[in-house]
Length: 302
Image (cartoon, rainbow, N blue to C red; front, side, top):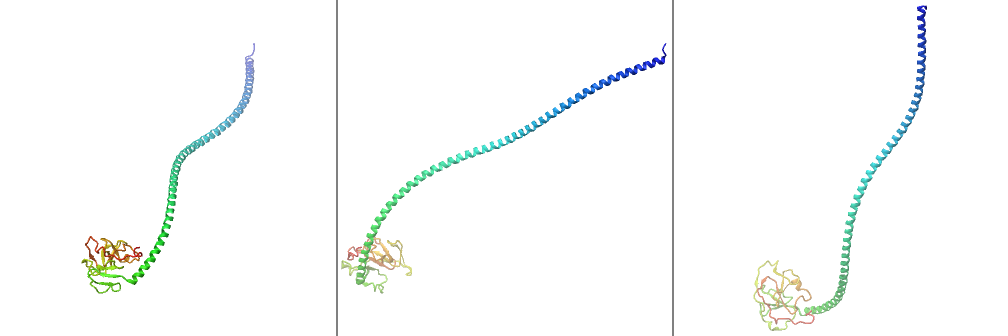
């Protein structure tokens, strides 16, 4: 029979052995698990490196895509700018076409106007030729007139010479027989009487002792500013001072300036009445007799 303490010791030893065996088994398992963990860690490291490499590749792709996207956005922005510029260019083209159409219309109008101007220029050229022809004719007429005026001047000089020799006769129109020369024309005769100015000898002298003028009604005026209230038929100005009325015409008057011209401005066979003071003449007929006319020479008839 075994001793109880010995049995207990054996049991303890067995337990220790079992525990040791269990520990070894557990250690082996732990080692195995450790190796597996190491292998797994190495695999994870390898996987991690692979993932990192893929991540870097993806990052590069993302960066590249971001660059591409940015480039695309820039391109889109540039496209929008270009489209806006194209629209503006289209509008400019439209405006240019409209302006060009307006310019074409203006050019067409200018061409028509130019044709009109050319036509007008040709007409003016023709008129200029006609005017030149008329000027040539006028030059011929001028030469002929110059020659005629020279002849008239020569004849007038002869007439003036004759008049200087013969003198001007002033016949009182209200007296039967009262005649004075030009030197005595300012003599103290009846101031209410009117004289007839006779430049050339009268052909019919039966009126030499006859009063030829009717009584005129005098119009009182300031003698310093005589105005006859009638107009000169030559210069068409109011007659002031001395008035010359044709004795053979119903209505023909001349002022002192026009009457003094050395050439004839009226019928040389007519005789004028010299009126110094304003008078009223109501007659609608010639005042002087038709036969009371001067002798006319060739020079005097010019």
